[in-house]
Length: 156
Image 1 (cartoon, rainbow, N blue to C red):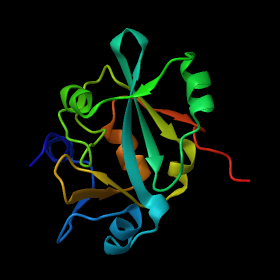
Image 2 (cartoon, one colour):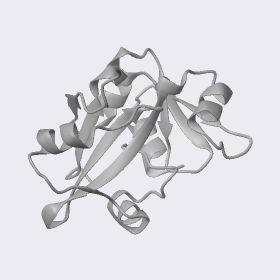
Image 3 (cartoon, rainbow, N blue to C red):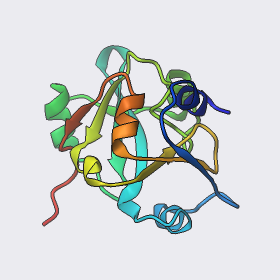
Image 4 (tube, rainbow, N blue to C red):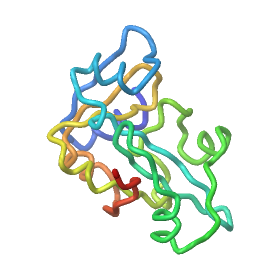
């Protein structure tokens, strides 16, 4: 059990767990093994802002974050990816297994708005090779607060 899976169980939030036979090498491989599309795989990405503040962005599969849009939403010109050490310190999870569930509630969570269009998603559980499968609405129920935003690059 991880912080994320314990939280879901304690709060009776519907979900399933999927264990990979071996660690996936790509989003496409993870999606295939979970019988999902790449856009159903949620990446939890932590960013550091000035004054040691952090924000997590939940991004569907292969979509890329628009740094320009993200800076505009956050009202800052300076933003960097958190280091692996910062990710572990701030979330309690290692990169590759990060879950937005069970993290420090002071971390602001932005969700790419297209994520809510999916009927089912999967995301990190806090343990490598183990994914949480649930609906977007159940994910939102599990998080203290989320902000929907269009942070992905525009498709031309």
